[in-house]
Image (cartoon, rainbow, N blue to C red; front, side, top):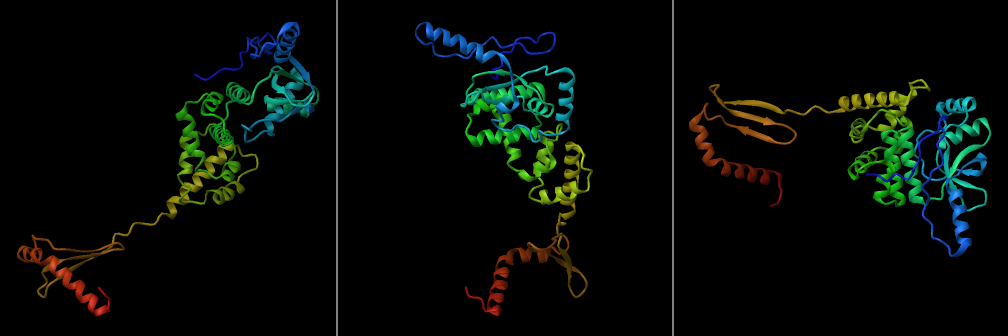
Length: 322
């Protein structure tokens, strides 16, 4: 089971999340000064604050292919009318009065559009815990698409996060992580950027597109197809258009298998001696025993010697050495 590092209590009537009551474990300092410092840390770690957006740095890994899109404008308008209902989460930076975002990038981008402060839960988390919080919150609020998760997994692995942390961040098993990685490793990054997040397009469909990579130039094909689509074409429709064009091209480019040329060899009286089949891979002589059983029996006894004699004749005529 994936670790849940949110520890969030039920929301109040207005939908705002109440401050978490679970605190990060810290080493106790001796004496009353240590106790007071721990109490202050507890308040700091779990309070919801109003913070200026320019005090927050866009930290961590990108888990979305598209951030500045029409949904940001819609979210900004909603916050303008109703206020920010759900806080973002940040952690203290190494600089005074500055923070690093853990989750809530879309809400932060929306508030930056309309102005004002942003409501934020301040938590003191390490890199692993921050990554898990980011992944779990995204899964709960706006599930990333298959391809976004795949990119996120690859980036986490390349940076060096442990498998358990990656699994907890996305709520996946080890096999689930592997399934995402297998597909993304077969797809050019440029192709993914051209198509976009494609919500609703799953592993099987992306895998089918990846399987065409050895038969079709996916990137150039995608560029040609997308150039013909309206600019506001949704990402899932871009995927379907690209896949349809690439699969059609793969079928059209498939060369027909050569069946070879077969000729019937007849004797002077017109009787069938056998057949000779020649294709790109082989030369085959076939003698049907039912047509000429005596000749078939005779040839069977001498076929190997006759083939060697033909080979010696070719070698002598062509001047090839042994």
